[in-house]
Length: 259
Image (cartoon, rainbow, N blue to C red):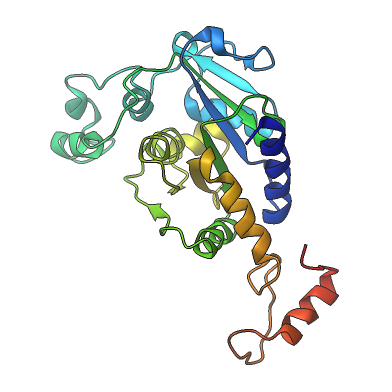
């Protein structure tokens, strides 16, 4: 896919899912020389969740580097831009978990990019100027369920949600999808809420850019069946599979021609 096609798909996914904030493209840059001029370099130190918040709510391409990165344990490990203190368990005992052993267990199985990249940029997908590595979608459980339906439509594997409550946007739907080449769901964690303006109902999805076209095709196909948005409420018994006559009521009511 070229960048223009990615932009167009981003616009259409925003429309099909009725997202409140645009889906995002995230790019890992090996060196600072690789950063495009249109990516705004944020001043001061910023965490990954802050960076994502800038891109979501200001709708700008934004970037941070090793030098402007605000340390945070989950993303320290995730990016390989830092490491846990030797006494991490003792420091966070009674804060992250009850015991030092429980703290260490929470971070023990994190995978890492091992510091291979010097910068990370985030942009609304509809305006990104480089091919991203990861796509993130922030939405409600209903909107992300639509993405699961799109995956099912394609016959893909079930989308995993696996969390310990730490490192949602910087690890669970960023590093994991990148390294494992698969789609993932996450619950926005408290860092995302404090620093990235995540809402109470927000969930997050991350997947490699190589899956973008397939998800888009699956979403478009859903417009012709009962799973399209808005949800078709009906309090009468409806036979399954749902008849075209039943679906026609929804298309007529909302002016949806199934496109």
